[in-house]
Length: 260
Image 1 (tube, rainbow, N blue to C red):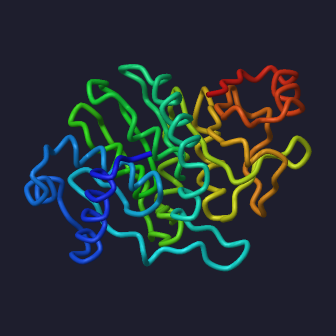
Image 2 (image 1 turned 180 degrees about the horizontal axis):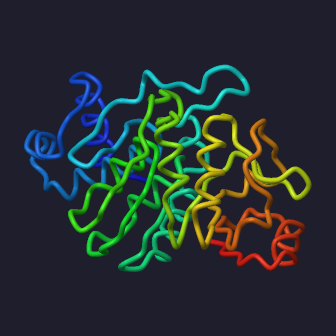
Image 3 (image 1 turned 135 degrees about the horizontal axis):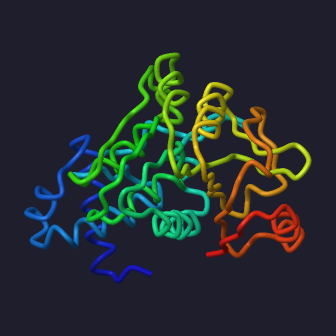
């Protein structure tokens, strides 16, 4: 639980970001009289609670993004649910990335934590197709970043278009990290958006080792757009809320399971 002093600082930061439609770390540190590292930690906390979007040099507000109608998907809504679990899953995934790797990072709130948690000292090549992952992945000059472009979906922050899809299909990666909206033993691994599902299918076909990052709420859930079978993945990273039934299912399929 934040101290009273930190709570006051968080309130000031949140107000400044909303009123100015964005603020830099340097500006916030100067106005508050604290270090840039302190502001960065405060922004990370606010971002994990889905109150702002934390970008490399500062923060932008999130109030224009909402969960929408029932059944709709928005990234801000997804980030608000299980923020701590997603952070731990993303950090574990980041620990699996080694210097020299060529990786694909899927869209989503958990994969954003993966990109954010990568060591800045790692020299890696990253292919991504969402704005939030792109912003986090591009924070280190040692990384080579490729972004599959197209029209930006404002709810998912995914770039969608035939040119971007073709790039993912032509690319090859040693490791790929995926998010999902639902994981079912019988109906497979699913997401909400069919266009996004096509990007995920292309990434699966273009990668050697496929790792699924899902919090335990996603198990026994089915979304409209199928993109993979459970057996398509080599490893799954999830939190301790996973049921024993699904632990058995995953291990019976020979899939490595990491519980964080």
